[in-house]
Length: 92
Length: 92
Image 1: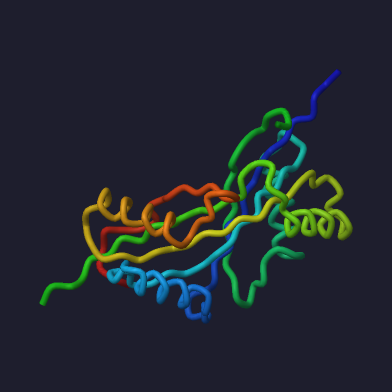
Image 2: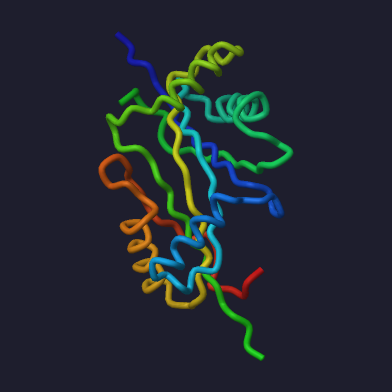
């Protein structure tokens, strides 16, 4: 019996330069108030780790780009890049 | 006049294995419904990009670890690691 092979890709999403980041501003302020006075700025981003079956990293990367354009990323406000985290390897 | 030198560190926060991730489950489901039927699983994480003045990366890394323990990370539910993104260099 053949085991399924998976690749784990990470989409890292950040706010475009100049977009307001109220959560980051709040965290900057909180860190300064609890003693980390030297912190200049904190910005917040998120990532999606996506497990997809297959061995062909180029094909999978193109599929993940389509997911970003369709659902995961707002291109007006956000930038993104894609990293390979694991695989191809059997599902964990 | 001396310009301030900064280091930009990224704290990448992920859920510990076994912790429920309802947002990731919703995104998995949404991707499958809009045509990405092969997606096996999506998990969601976040990151903090922290700009701190200084040149001594070891000292700055220890300070960022303290920020994680004090405010940024919930050690019951979350894992984290620290990456250097930029610097030391003059503030942008």
